[in-house]
Amino acid sequence: MSSSPSAPLQQLAVKIDGFFDRVMQRHPTDMQCASGCADCCMVELSVTAAEAAAVTALVAALATEVRDGLGARARAAAPSVGTDAAPAPDRCCALDENNRCSIYAARPIVCRSHGVPVRLGGTRPEDITSCHRNFTARGPAAADADCVLDQTLLSAMLLTINRAGGHGDDRRTLRDVIADATRRPR
Image (cartoon, rainbow, N blue to C red):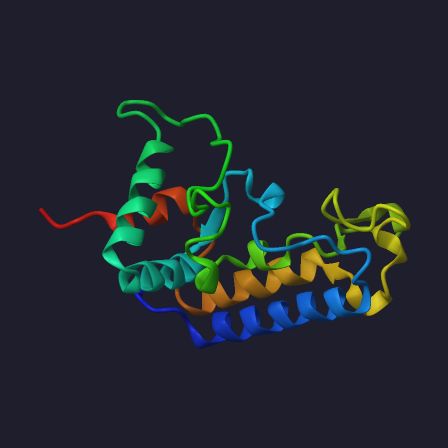
């Protein structure tokens, strides 16, 4: 696996960040996303190999203390030796004690899009969803049409980037990527 993020992944990340900013600017009273809110981070995420490379590169550049804390959280959430899987952790191992992302600059694409209105397949208003804290008065379908993210298109773009990098369709848990990236050589 490559140890640095790909230019296409970085370009997609910049576009998604810009999209998120546009939604925040157009719908400031509907969007409650802010630093320290971690409702969207209470899941076990999987990432593509391209995203894993970006996370690995960032982790390598972190201060030792931050990297060690991140690694400890990832290993604490890892499955026990000899088991197939662990229960999903109650929080992403990248979150620090203040609910701030330790890998924010290289966070996966799904993390960059959390909170905004997202179209999940269909064309009906009820096919648009968002974080339960956002668009509470009017519902996420009330967002401007160019402020609704098409999840199918976004997933296809990320898969194309991953395949173009020779990575196929494989995914890994973010927890495993971080645990591997923070292991000290013996």
